[in-house]
Length: 123
Length: 110
Image 1: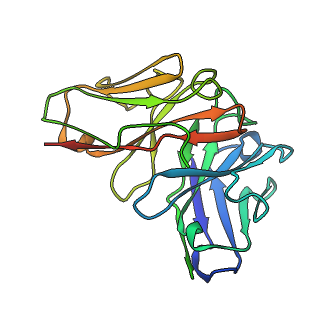
Image 2 (image 1 turned 60 degrees about the vertical axis):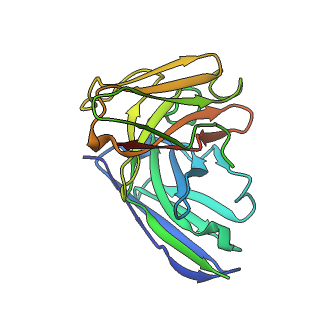
């Protein structure tokens, strides 16, 4: 059974930093690209960042570019999101999401989602 | 800022058919496959339709998807109370190098 378990969320002040982690199990971690998708309270889904299976392709939403860094450890079956210079508008539930492709593209499908971890940024 | 546009809400009585539209552009829906996600209250999204019109195992055939040009649609027939949820379309965008989501449609069963 595929499992994605996020951790590291919490309350942080504006301008602060936080590091999210996602522990994966139940599939061959090194064969899939991974993503962070967030959802602000009462709002829709917003893609944040993607990383290919080997980490060679990395993409960011404009809203987080230069502030967030995605990374993965294929030996530890873990995905990370380092979030710096946090703003109130970054407050959201952050989901760790698997793409069924090695690299995001035309046939991408975000097929498995974690339960999410809440990040709250106080101003 | 969502790149794909959906109506904010849709509703119907039990047994009725509801259709949700998703409008995009040539760089996303026009050139890539569309997926649909269902998000029940308080839960993570799950795949409802993939590759425009395919259903994962366990998804009833009351749910169907289609795509034409730069638009896509999700239809729910035989509406049930358990279908009350938020529905999102999504696709890869070649110009943005990003996954893009629709604005979301909240379905209510009257």
